[in-house]
Length: 492
Image (cartoon, rainbow, N blue to C red):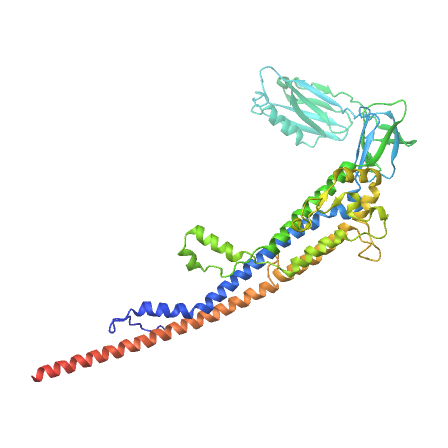
């Protein structure tokens, strides 16, 4: 029930302003809850932003933690003009011999062509005469009815939709029929005159060409003869494209694609440096005391740039010294600095393949664990000991031993644990319900805000009720005073 309000009619007091000022004080607990909610939302969003970075980096590790992905192969031919090759998978041998005895030749299907009359300049011009023709094949006869208003394009469409086993096309002023199989066919005019399409009058019959059968490719790979339907084929992870018949075998060499391995490792180092820089920036971000999130009404009273600056100051340091990210950063560094057991001791750390911390002259603390590559040393390690370089990143431990687990898998595990922790704390936009720690906190704050809003409504009504009663009392007093004054005045 709404309270009837008297705004200072009797007392002359600005009751509206007085109640508003009193309610500002009363609303402070709600304002604090709203500020707390904003901080929680910023913290949640920052966690999710970091989680997205961690997830992207974790996915990129698949190119390193599986030896088959990192150990890319490169195939080369003695003569690309005769036989060209591309490694498509993981070839099992380092060398292959191939001799080409015969190239594949595609079959030439039977066909028939008809020279169109000069009175029909293009495929979109009407033919001008009606007639009917049949397409006769071993599987049956299909009848095509041509109208005078049909164009060549329309005739082609009718043939192609007739299910006759013959397809039509138009090229160089000729209507060409081609068999979809190796079977011959006939075209016969059974009604009207098809001379405009070079088919002749009624009874004219045209046989298709006989076509030519195809021939297979015949090759010898490592001494074994293979008959193939195409000149391009894949054998043991290598795509071959044979181009000429040979009189003697050619050699195909398969080697580790050193450039691909180098680029994969280089990209990994760059992404790793970007990630630890982003994490360190978050946990080292300065936190400014005395700055709080702005309420909507506060933003409205400030210039846009001023409000934005104050918001950024309040938001700064939201994840400063965050324990989850701090531990993740240390764990990532440890994963790369701990030597790998179960491998050649000469290749059990990153430094042995040319990947180290800051070089001489750079402050290690300021570099925050950034990695640097000695490209010449890394290329040499890949060239001379590629398998051991790959093993350093991708070694699998049957016993799940940390020391025996490859560096990429260590990082993958650290990231997985951190992603799970951050998801439990901040949830994900992909989930319809946010059941995370912060999600529950925000929900609780919303509930408290609602309780407080209801309470403030009651408090405001109570203030108005008191002031209304005061106004009524003053009005009554003033009325009595006036009556008494009038009474005294009347007795004089």
